[in-house]
Image 1 (cartoon, helix red, strand yellow):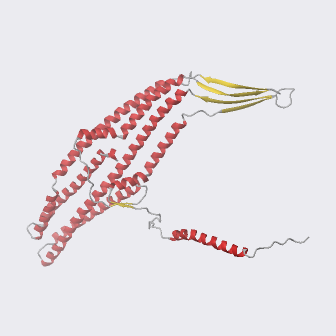
Image 2 (tube, rainbow, N blue to C red):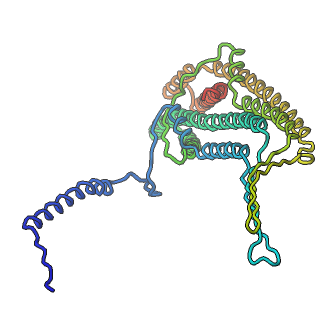
Image 3 (spheres, rainbow, N blue to C red):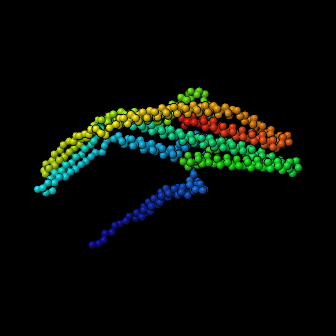
Length: 428
């Protein structure tokens, strides 16, 4: 038998080469940009080597939006709420169907003499599913309000950190001004010491003042750094550069009763307590229906040696013991939830009224400070000590009091803005 020889067209090798070249060009076009992207430099932290996604802003709202997206604690709470909500849904569904098969044997019969197959499904009375669904909806509403309350708490903490960062920067500017004035005095009195117009005691006094300022600067920088790191942590580890040194504009409270009403009506903790109390009342209704029997229906097939019987299975269970004292327990929980709601409302009202009173007191204390006057007095004291009108000791006594008052004014402003943030926390 002769081997079969297939003729190969002359154009086939050329076609294969052209197709191969085309495929190679396509693969190059696909993978070359990817390889270029892989070799592009990626900004990384020099110490940890991790990729940094930096947020740089002077707007507190932008920081809060980022924290709401990235905060790990808030994400954990949200997932827990989601899990509990799904658990409630899973508890109000049909029972699993049951399948039973039995095989029978008897003497005188080889092999199986008969069998039984039972397929059944148990269920509660339909009204009980509807009642439980309404109770679960109220419970999920309470969970949602609780999640919103936690979200506002976390955002309020982040906002307070931002306000602290602003305060530390303002204190740093004050300390920088204090250090600059002390440096100028040190230069002046060093020259006077060389010319015999000043004593070494005066120069040493200025140097000790500089040491005190340096210590205060170090403490303030440490506090600023701790606040910045805390903000990074609240933002899910994302590097956050918040470099504002001034407070944002805040809507002042003109009508206190309107502010109280707004606070109470929008308080998520009150909403959560209301939903929890409503769910507890609905639980009483659900347990009152616990006396209704549970039902079971199914299919049954029995076989003898050569015969088979088919039929339906109908049954039920009477809750004589399983529902014992459940209504009483539900009523007790309902009373407890009602009392908790009253307590939350009273605490919320007390909190907002205390905040408004403290806000007024803090505002009055801030208004008592005349900051332009104090800064002008510092300038006059500097000119007076340079001109020899007052002694260096007198200058430091007066200037120290002014610096203390300026620092107290900065701290009071920080406290007032924190109070306003808490008054308007339900707007977060």
